[in-house]
Image 1 (tube, rainbow, N blue to C red):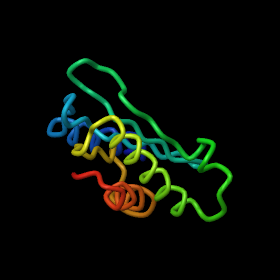
Image 2 (cartoon, rainbow, N blue to C red; image 1 turned 30 degrees about the vertical axis):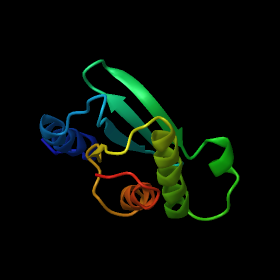
Image 3 (tube, helix red, strand yellow; image 1 turned 180 degrees about the vertical axis):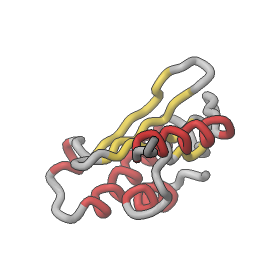
Image 4 (spheres, helix red, strand yellow; image 1 turned 135 degrees about the horizontal axis):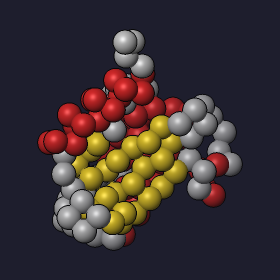
Length: 118
């Protein structure tokens, strides 16, 4: 049986989720990457709730020019700004089975530049 990309990503995702666990004080920063956009959430795994979310489809980001890597950096900065307003300074990064490369890396760098620690 051939291993598909989706199956491989799910195995990697399970391996990551064994270690990365979000709490109210330091939530899990979960990244989802589609062909058109990038989405990020701060999740409290104890209560099972999404605290804050941002995406490339948001009003301030969707109209900007640039490639998808530039958009990902803006999404990282947006989530960091929302998190600091909510009083969250540290998070646990969950790359969700994607390689730490390209858009995922750019999002993480944008969030770090805007003040999140992980």
